[in-house]
Image 1 (cartoon, rainbow, N blue to C red):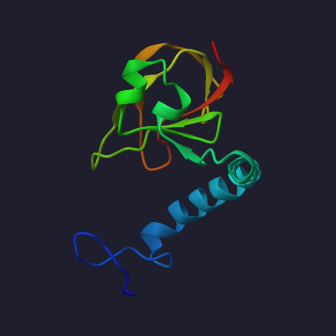
Image 2 (cartoon, one colour):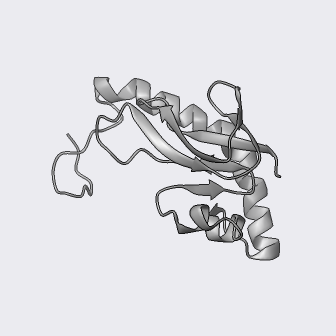
Length: 134
């Protein structure tokens, strides 16, 4: 296997490893699909200084729960991301600020204002698109 930086030190999976190729292809398509959104968020950053990755303190300052969170964030103005931080996790608990949200992966509308639990795997982490802020 090729080298690279991994913390803690160890062998790092490479794109050409057979057990990694499908995941790499999936996430590469995901990245390409989001390119127009990231491009728009980058233009907003250039114009206003609002960062692309946003702590809830910037996006929901009136929501004390959201503002205190350190393990989820907004990507641009409309995407809520909650990375999976536990190895082998099958579910992820996250806080959804007030508004109407759509699950990125299923298209299901989430009408939540508070804590929810979502299933996770190697091809899905909690990602929601804001469709109406309340």
